[in-house]
Length: 420
Image (spheres, rainbow, N blue to C red):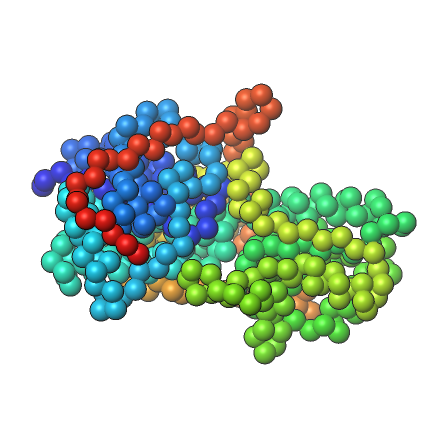
């Protein structure tokens, strides 16, 4: 079998552990140099392939690649760009083939969420449709934890750990000051259609009256009166109220509380501002002093408090992707299979990209309490092992050390430029 090069790319919103998956891909490929030549990384995701901007990772030292495990963000650059169907935009696929052929690329590893797995599936079809065979494997990643089939998504466990920890710590601050100061605190977290991240805030407390007192999920229609009634009850009963709100919280008619009136590159409604919207609602209706915060990029880049489980799983799916490709698998994605809850035991399985693409896994209704404002014991049992363990990065001069890559581009072999 002829040795072929590989193309790896990162896609969509990055995470604290996506580079651990990159490390898994690159290190495993290096161990199989008799079958895989160079690993080229796309500069800014799939755009790197279309623009023929291929980072030659063979020029990076083993030490630099190893350091990816404790480096957040996307080491090679990511993007939000969704390929259309071959029938709609054939020129993009012709360009991919042109670039792949020029650089002798026979393996494609795409590291991303649902939209990204759709792209990976479309690329896998090029062999049949356009006569260029390429082995295509998806690598799962999303903080939203909404990919189907897999028990959890690499990137989620670390966000969950950050949100649970931040909720606990902020709650202690509010509790200590509520007698004469702030009585309501709202933390806005990511999660457009699925409330997994918001649910993780519930791990901060467990007993009666322990915060968060209210969790707002996209799965449960927002009821203004019920929300305000619960806030007022908590303030009177406990002295303060802590709210964890998903950015995707929405009214019964489907309107987002935080609809910014714009669309992102994937065509999704641009969200932002659910925390101040809720805080103003509380001020106008109840008159309580409040504070709000938006976890925003902090939650998905907090490698310093990453879950050890998450880091291990992120690396393993990258490693498994390469092994699946070498085993002759095509158009599949490695998934995490929960074999046992206590103690948590998991293994790697696989799912077809055709069924993963563009699917969203929402929270089961039995994970949410009957009043719609909290998580059940079943949800705790699911979440707890995903935030388990510490995987601290090395520190230097008081701050984390991160990978320093050269990210040298391979020499271009095509004369034509591509315009998106």
